[in-house]
Length: 225
Image 1 (cartoon, helix red, strand yellow):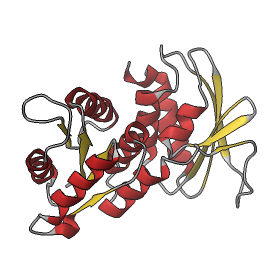
Image 2 (spheres, one colour):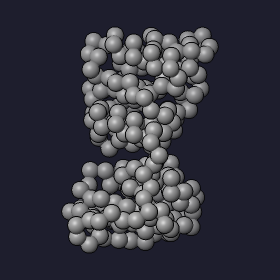
Image 3 (cartoon, one colour):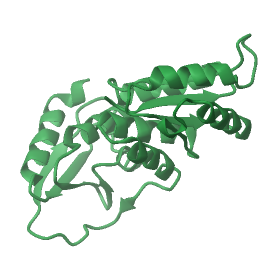
Image 4 (tube, rainbow, N blue to C red):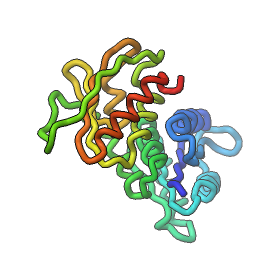
């Protein structure tokens, strides 16, 4: 079971677009849109949100994201009306970035609290570092050239994060002078690594070698493009 997501928006097409993007990041996560009014107008519909939350909950809970203030109110009312209000939570997060971060976390098997935290933390600037933090033990490293068309952007970044999810390893990806946490989709995307760019991968921890191998395998098959 994975945590489900519901995107609440005043515009049906906006909610559907965010859902489409999130689904690319997390193909095994239920992400549903609850956008617009039943007649196609602009607004949010309480009954539609309730129905989406119920459908999205496979037993691990649901995280709701919203676009504007009144959508938040509708989402919160929907959660309060559930038989178990504790099974769902409304998160204050940027809609697109929050949905991407939350969907990747859910895909990796994170619980509801961790998925909600991933969405909420997406509101902060991505953590791009300018140097390796001190680590115990020598890191394992590899250098890779990106040959896939879009470089290390949304879908490839999500694939990389998912490939090392659950490993006991701290992974850092460096492009030039910038470095990003290999477990953060948004941080990886912020590197703006493009086709033909060369990245340096460094990993420490008990499963550092496995993390390096998985990332090398992804690069070798061009991130499944």
